Image (tube, rainbow over all chains, first blue to last red; front, side):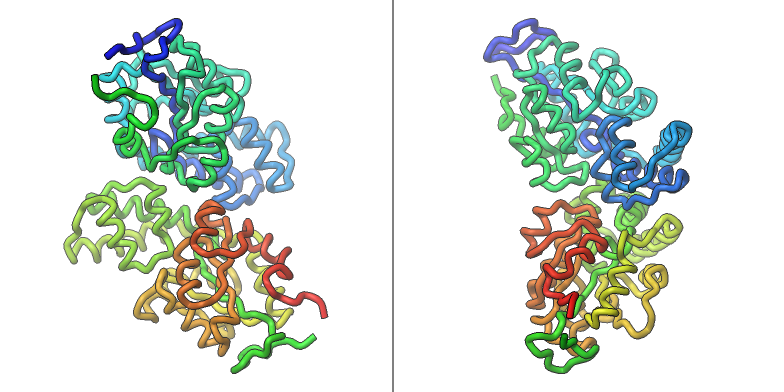
Length: 237
Length: 237
């Protein structure tokens, strides 16, 4: 079996695909805490949005999330209250961090990819400060490229994050699969010309993910690990 | 315009349909709090289930929820720990009750139904003790029939709750519409021979609700209120 080296400049047709992961809701069970953290923060700046409507925005870039909240609620926030909303969310999320867990199979999947010489990276709309705890929980070390929201001009559903992670791995996006739990991941994958795989563990329905471009949908990282051969990974020599 | 009297024994073909409502996730924004309350309670009895998998069980009868949790996690709970799990959930939910709100348009929808002489009732898998706070928030008085989980042999997805509410209203189930946010409501509606209407505000995707039998899907009570004429209510004389 020929494997891709970790940073192949031009992957051969029989190289392993590279995996570009979203973080929250994909590897980490944190979406429901983000929803309630935003709900609490929004309430404090006078915006009353129901939980499900917030849920459907998680994973977008901070700017787009906030713009969507304003449109959905019909409220405009002053620049001062905008900054306050972000601070309030971060604080409310931190107070819930103790309840955040790794999703089933996430560590095992990353370990298997390393063994199979499948390069992988993380692209998250979150700020690095908010992602650190999750990366630690997953045991992701410095050898894995991680690109966060503040390091690109436009986070998801723009393709920037996945284009940057693919570049960091030295793999053309066309040889990458994007793994995400939200429609924003899958729209970004399409725009990056990568294939999209949806995971249900962020709480979206299968059809929402399929319509956004997922060509396969699995329950969680454990389910994806059990079906790696379905998504172009050669698991046996 | 001829209206149904509030308790017609045999509704005429031109009577208004009766509305049978689910409560959590349909009229009250409480699903995400229930998810995290169950997550906390499950953790304390040694079961680690991800939030999304818990989310998909909310709305089933207590017995079925717990049986599903055991199957999904591969853990058996002793009768003692089963009782403890329920107590822990109720306690964890109560501590989150201050963040629970009425869903957009819920009060306005109920008020409009009263004005239009559309009979309505509530059928919830919850215990009465857990439902009381929600009923108060909605301003639902004693004139509205409310049937809770412990008052029927089998809660959702069995049809008992909706059959009992229809009977209390004195309306044949075939003349009722069931409004719910979960697949359990819609499966129960089918088995009661009522028509099912899905609401997205509990966090399910549209396709999940449609496949479970919803013939229409709206965002939330406000959206349903704006489209009452689509679901068989005559809004003008």
